[in-house]
Length: 275
Image (cartoon, rainbow, N blue to C red):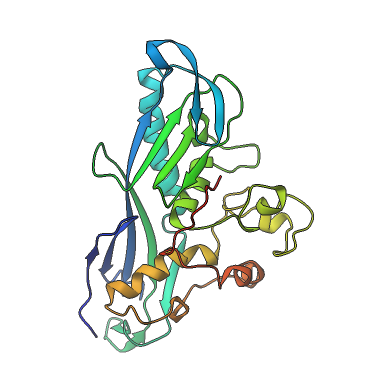
């Protein structure tokens, strides 16, 4: 087996690969994507309690001043909601022999280990990979967005709370930063979120609408792409396709995954704003 690169620093994410047997189960590897995020509190101009600002996709958005407790709560919630929504939801199984291990009490079993796909978000004040500007709107609705190429997000105080659909907006927006379009393709119409009856490119129904890149919170096989892209680099094997890494999934989910299997890899970020 080639030497494993344990840590990699990147423009958009850092990553750590670890091999550690857990109860001789074969689940003896993990790949953690690490994102350094700077959250910027946006208050009304000129020290006022209320005001109007341009904020991402919103123009002339009325906002209010943050309180210290609101801002502290947002920071804590942002990190926990992002991690809990994405981390340890998927795992990879290599199709080749590179990580075959001998396990068992008598060391008499050979297995292909499961590589747990983990995520960590670190809140920083400098040296960030992603900067998110956050407002406290005076209105009930504002459009949040994420631009991976610019490494810039626009959020509001409500984005750490579930919508009526159950989706937590910061988790959805972080998915864009990881490189994913909407489940129904790029754009912001009902078809893209699969909340409409039909879509010309993806089968839209209540199941696909429940995808985290639709209007729900379910993490699917196709979301493993970010980890599939990075794991080969940790093994010094950049020539292999991401298709060399299986993602265990249920038969029910296969049709959704197959629609996205050939999507652009996340190392080629999209150039458009994504909401």
